[in-house]
Image 1 (cartoon, rainbow, N blue to C red):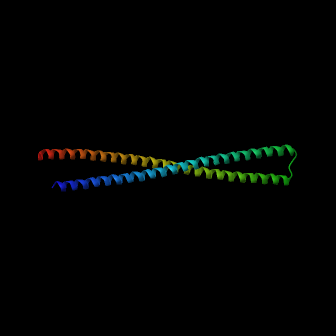
Image 2: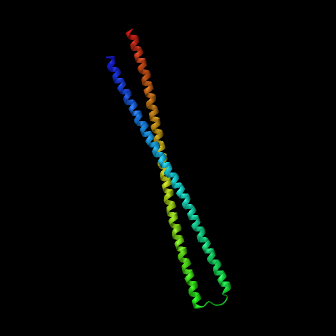
Image 3: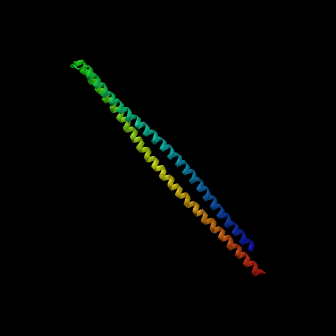
Length: 171
């Protein structure tokens, strides 16, 4: 009869160890997922900084072009103190039109860079949030595993005490 009890006890211990193995596997998977989210977060931050640099370059380029246009206009006005002919007026209007077109193109590129930056900021926040959630989930699983292992040790102590009292009663 004691032998049947020992077999059942071994089966329970095997089930407990399988549960802890499964929990260990889940924890490892969550840690891998956290590492992937961290890598994605780093990439997103790098892209955001790159887009910010590009955004700054475009704004600087736009400002330089506007300053150059102002400078050219001043130089032309100093040189041509007289009246402009109709051909010169057309050339001047064509220059203005071309500069406005270039300015519109640069503004469009700037808006696109700002949209991409906004999207990447959102992605970075998303990955940061996911990372925090996974870390919290991992902590809960580790705490649960510690409780299970602690309970198992307590059950082992109770088992030893029960066997000792049975041994004393038999003698």
